[in-house]
Figure 1 (tube, helix red, strand yellow):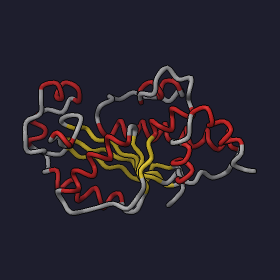
Figure 2 (cartoon, helix red, strand yellow):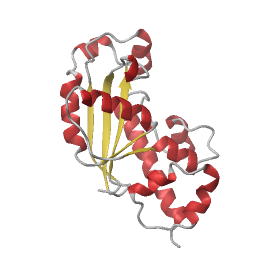
Figure 3 (cartoon, one colour):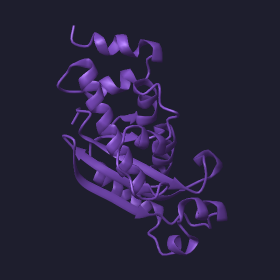
Length: 205
């Protein structure tokens, strides 16, 4: 499962910006790709055991009433670790989602073994002429059809999956390679933007 086209792409909606400040996850959505095909999806609201702010209700459309009827975070994360299995993971702005995933898993004593990649970091290197690298902007930039509501976890994960597959295809085309290993994505996401063309041009030498 070390191919970049076989990954779990996830997204969290949360009570705020940082688990270090006590924020918790309130929804998770994920898409499982196998050789570039969506083979499974996961979505669940998560009851954080507290009220969320009016801003978060407005931003996400997730209300306190909805959360009061949802499973506790720990139960959802137990199910989600089974969904992840040993797949590598992808998120748009992965440092945010990884912090919340790690934080929520601390409450369950569960863990995952896959590596994380960030579609945001990758997009900054592949699409340097994009107006910005927000998910919605990149979806428009790449001409990907969209008709749902951003800031809901499953839809954001679905759109990130569409963008991810475009990026993997673009890497194949630019580097003239037939397969993109996941560790290649990790390397590409960290190199300076000015060196991207040279990096991709020399992969097959």
